[in-house]
Image 1 (cartoon, rainbow, N blue to C red):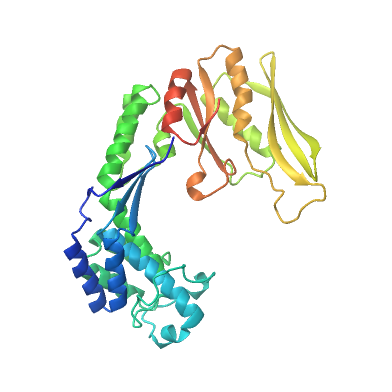
Image 2 (image 1 turned 90 degrees about the vertical axis):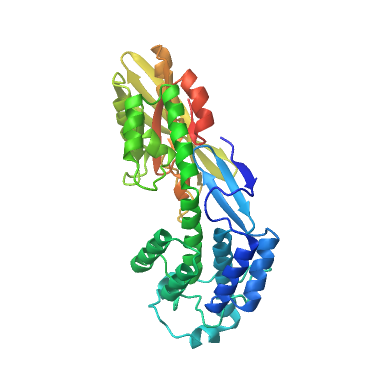
Length: 387
């Protein structure tokens, strides 16, 4: 599934504003002593030049809508960047500014780390000297942004909860959250419409029944958008697996996998499972392949897949640590399905990408598809592998 960027000047919600409106918001930010006069001028220059961008990504259809120009989210995004640049500039060159600001809020100092410096051509000198970048004035900053009218009450309440829980602890992060949540709610109706249409597509190809579709649609909470794995969880032929608590060795991982396959394929009565590491030298490294073999009924099935590279001299840094799962394990199951004349093949869905985890390391989804279904689903799920 390709990611397509759609550049749009059309509003999908209520956050697009006129340039005169943007000028009024910018002036209010100066009066509230959030931006300097210079910061106001830079903000308006960037809005007019369409150099500030808001993105909304649709996970189910793989498109990203990009919006430029006067929008509330873009004003918030500018403030996030300006506070971040100012934080770095003060830390490196003007520590006295933060020292002179009275702490109105408790700081979570252990969570703040400085790396590098302000961005090249960053937005420095845009933040008032009376406004902290390290969290000293964060509660008042949130209230001021709400009073100015840049965020809804819903976003305000979520951010207040973030301050209480400690998940938001300094101003750059506060503005990033306000921009992200404002964008989310502004595009919620579009996202929900796309998900409903996506589910209808699953029903049309027989992956989901009408009853499962109804159960899924009833399960939505207010303003909830689901991930593709969450949608698939309502399908009979889908099973998510989590190995994060399983010891990362083949003799522990793969019995769990093949026992789980039996839940999707009740006739998969495998036994005599063997897992063999095959090593071969490649320059200064040792390549390790894993041979998986088992017996079902009177037939023997096997497949060799890549496992790991290791140093000849063991590396204690952790770089030799293998992935928990190689999704090619499905190939040995598909050899059995082919042999018995089944119309289904086993596919895998990567469940780790959203959390930035290396593919196949902690989680994987199992999905049974016919050939016709697979032809459709390879266009609907970007992280689908097999057969």
